[in-house]
Image (cartoon, rainbow, N blue to C red; front, side, top):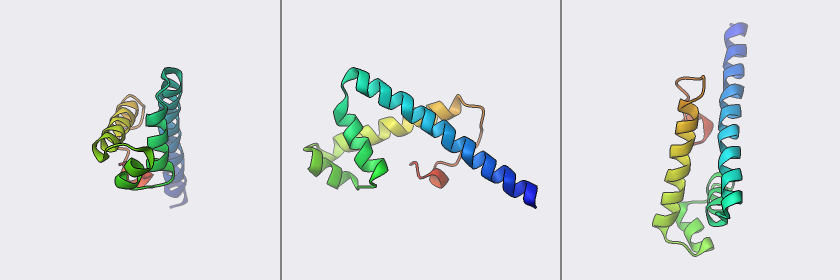
Length: 97
């Protein structure tokens, strides 16, 4: 029992590490390209947990633009995970998507 719990914690840590690496790559790209609107949008959505409509209002964007940014990030993270060594990551368990 203890070994399965340890493996579960280990896997969770690895999943989080992979997501962090993917986000770091995206953030670096946005900074280099000057895509600060996307960066602000994603920070409000994922870090602060704001709903799309509040992010849209705060940043002066349409709700569709916010949804597009969110979809883009989730798709990129899914690609990043697909290229990783871990199969079967559950995005819901990680608070992504």
